Image (spheres, rainbow, N blue to C red):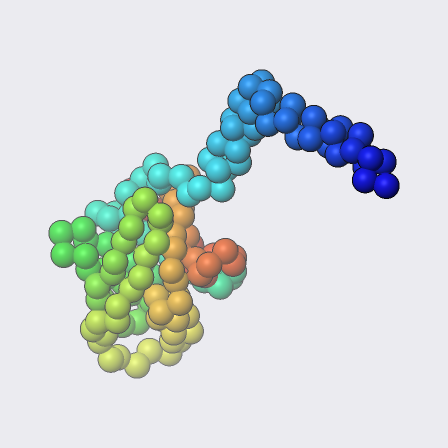
Amino acid sequence: MKAKYLPVLSICLGIIYSACSNPKDSATSSSDTASAIAETAPSTPALAITGVKWKLIELMGQPVADSVNGKEPFITFKKEDSSYAANGGCNGLGGKFELNEQTLRITFQQGMSTMMACPDMTIESGLKQVLTDADNYTISDSILSLNKARMAPLARFRKVE
């Protein structure tokens, strides 16, 4: 009965040996693996996030007006002291941020905020929520996106020239 399985076992071992020892297949497999890793790994941003004024253009998938309550919604990042300054169309916001340019990870720490009351606080409230929730960013074609995990962008900003 055992002799009946010996030819099948020999064929299986032969297939495994030939698959493992074929250098052409190994090279193809390695390059395919490298390509797959390159496609999924975050790319280095073409534009630095710091030292630039970013105008808020989209919040939670909805377009943002150029002016809210007579002010332009924006965010800036200072590399020297890892601080950010922002405005959601009413109050000035600011605090510290931590940035990893290799992994494109970002976290915000709440800092100060002015306390004015304005007719429309919707954009400001949404921007505050984005700064609480965002954990990564991407930059593409002068557009900064603040994201949470792999979901749709929470906010998008355009570089101001």
